[in-house]
Length: 378
Image 1 (cartoon, one colour):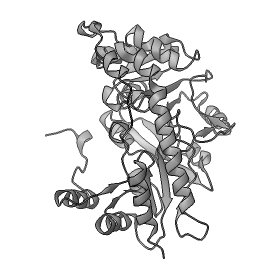
Image 2: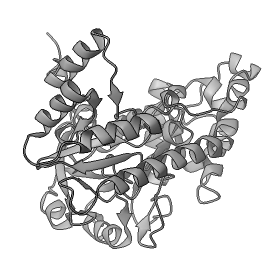
Image 3: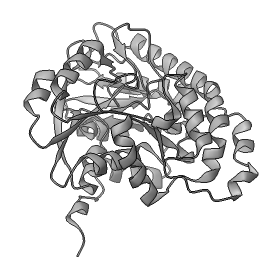
Image 4: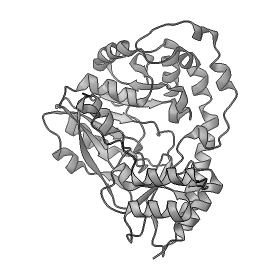
């Protein structure tokens, strides 16, 4: 009696079952998957709460594209690169994807998405009756887009190419040469570029070849997505946005008018919330840097473990000895060492064996967890 769009296997997997059993028994788990900044021990400024108490929030003002005060604050975040009139406010980047897929695609049309990447696109696209086609990311000392494979997967029904920049969990940024090739592939085909830039403030080191945002790309239709969840470490406040160009704005505003999902309090607070982002970002960057440095220092040249190159974001990927499957590694670490990590197949890694850890993890937990992981050698 329910839509085929919801025909997903929602049953608990073996890892979730074991984790529940461990926690039910009272076991102390070293959780190296923590990606929620509000639960990772950071200090938030008091101004956040006072900003949310603005009395103007008591008045309902339904503005489809978002209140002017919020859009101006978001434009300010881009330091003059973006006019507020190019911004559509959403409740989240997930909702932003839904709006964009509604705008661009008819049922059965296709969007190209990276693999590996965050395991969300299959669900978001299914809800819009859009088909996901994966294009591979390749690893040879660093991650790159397999542009030839991507080109071969473009069809007459391709409506968009999704970029996660930097990617989650690989942490790889789009490069100038890759963007040039993508523009060539899309030009004249009515294919849009959708760039998820929620982690773009969290680059590691410098790279002159890096593209951190598509907001300045005018050659074709692009959509740049971001939000408070990562920019200000405030996932609970539900404010995201889309930056795009003229041809898309009217349609997006019509779609947004149908939902009017963004609350007034967070929009009135947007200037203060974005202005305070430096306080939380500095803590996150320091934590990520320290944990990544520790991880790299623990793995020597002779180790059977390897840390893959990461350029940005909050995650690191470990290549594990191939003496077990990823699932066996995760189950064994949880059962025997009380350490929780994520397997690569959660993110659609195509080969074995990779484990993903969050660099947001509090340092003491991270160091002890990594020590227990690396105690397993061939």
